[in-house]
Image (cartoon, rainbow, N blue to C red; front, side, top):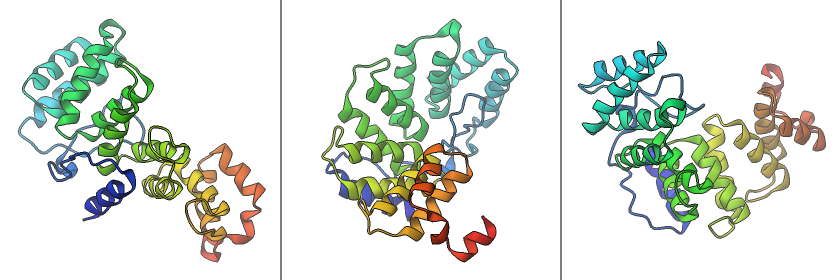
Length: 249
């Protein structure tokens, strides 16, 4: 239900009518993304399919530093169409100097992303945004960020928020940017928490609310975000904290 609501909001604000199969897979059924090269805050769950033991074996090879065996194991699974193995294989093509191949990494990200793997969708969006391994293409970046955002990846929600905030590849839309920052902030992204707090302080894309500003800025500040500390001091937010927040903060 929550995912569908987010999807509807994102479709509404984006103005991009991509045919995204929101219900084509269920993230909770799994991506076994718990190995060392996982990027922070990506949304992964334990896998529950029949290939779990093979995937676990491939992960074990990687964690033991047996990269050649890990590569062979992930490749075999990827060729069988396993989306998480395809994602890991792409990561290995970028992480292992001996096998560095951006073209192959993009190929496997695409395979995995098209099957609905949210991390592959996010990484593929980054590739198109920065032009890493593919020609820079903001429309394709937006398309894949949108898919990853619908699937709950806070970094994708944050990046889309930036793009709407600055009108990069899309028409500038402060309400859309604030909404995306809110999704990402609730997902634990500290940059989004700081950005959302600032927008509440200034009333950008949302009604001004210094209490909400203090709440979100403090969350980011407590995790060491430098800009959040500057916002805190600039708007003198201590007096705007809720009493309960003061007690637990």
